[in-house]
Image (cartoon, rainbow, N blue to C red; front, top):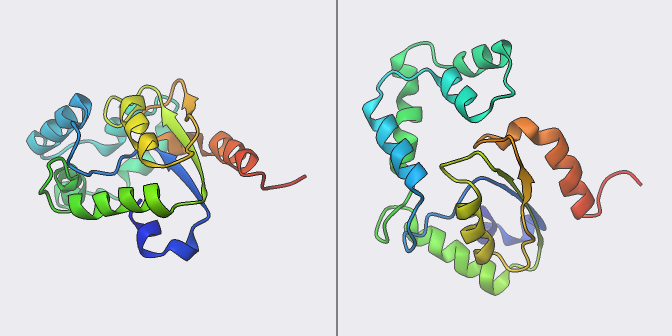
Length: 172
């Protein structure tokens, strides 16, 4: 969400799903803190099983596909590191650019936004998305995906159709 600040002429619409601008000036969810702690204590996680916890519609083939890039523990370094990179305090690396992006959205953004949220996401679910929605003027209430967790991309077909409809794009 910091790219529109850097490339403002490239963006007219946003599709936002289970994320946040880590500005460091609000309390991140307990779900995120618990997830970050769990990841830091779990050196060799099963990525496919982790995905299944958040995405109950996955098939066994989907789970195998999510596991495929992670041949062994050394390939999971990024998965383990990423939660530590999310800015959760005011002076954390990345928090300043997130605040600049928030300010840009509030002062200069005149595009359209569409949100979709997985209602089963304890990490960046509805409470965090409502904080983000408050940062983006005219951002409508999110499309709520009842059975989805964090990885709402797995419901991409219905989300894309609703976003195109909201943006008045697509086939007539």
